Image (cartoon, rainbow, N blue to C red):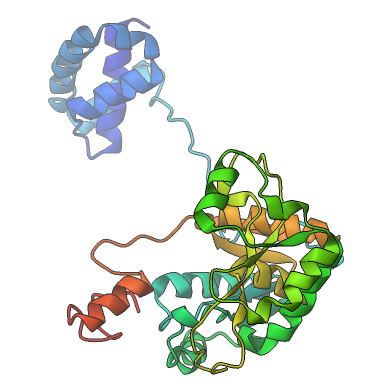
Amino acid sequence: MDIEETIYKYALTNAIEHGNKCQVGSVIGMVMSKNPEMRKDPKTVSQLAGKLVAKVNNLTPEEQQKEVESLGGLEQHAKKEEKPKGLPELKNTEDKKVTLRFAPNPSGPLHIGHARAAILNKLYQEKYNGKLILRIEDTDPKRVEPDAYDAIPQDIKWLGIEPDEIYTQSDRLEIYYEYAQKAIEIGAAYMCKCDGGEFKKLKDNCQPCPCRSHTIEENMELWNNFENMEEGEAVLRIKTDINHKNPAIRDWVAMRIVNQEHPRLGNKYKIYPMMNFSVTVDDHLMGMTHVLRGKDHLANSEKQTYLYKHFGWDVPEFIHYGRLKMDDVELSTSKAREGIENKTYTGWDDPRLGT
């Protein structure tokens, strides 16, 4: 079939499939996609398409059908591969009860991004007849909105989600202290008194800080005196690969001092775990098998894997999905709060917010 006959057949096919009228642009697109060799001479293709489209559009439907049959029938389109519908299967679900968690920070009411995560976990819980845990992660006193303790369970209920178990991390600080001490005892963690800026310089150059060589006894002595230190004076670090390609992964902070009254605990505690430490401990103790979260947590998953391996624990399946972005709708809790304070927004129920 020569070039003119090929274009003619595509024009007839396009016309018959679209109410007996075809468009030059559509025909050119069909020709170029199916016949890459014709891309070398687009001028000829364009000129012939214009002429042949006009010819086809002047034919009656009966004449178009007769012409295309004389050329062997309609041009066949490559069938598009249908994407499977429904939730993708989770890996490693055999011989275990699938356990998932929705774990928001109570820095404000839930927003659409939270709802997406919560519902996704609920759907997988139903799919595998598993367990869903609601865990309120409030170990940073500086990022807690007291009203959120009531708002989060209400929003979860409004979404039609009934968690099997509910935990609040501020109730579990003694547990984190216990595992922090265990991490020191097995040589997986060390107390670091380096200045933050100096530590960053060393870390960025793949160099260990002097504190990394402390003995277990020296670390335990500092840990036992941690309560008497000031904010920023020391932190507990988890040992990772000091040569890791991502500086953020290198010897991350597990525990630190926060001089801020906690909405639920008052001033009872001053040593608080960082998210990666408390989350890893809780996910293990609560039997988490699969962790669903955004791709912005990829580095956190890697950090937490180090702690799992230090303790000899099974690592859950980490599933990361794309972040939700909406035009003209604010999803950042901190920016929303700032906007409420400066009167940009009327409150958490302002329709310009994603809450």
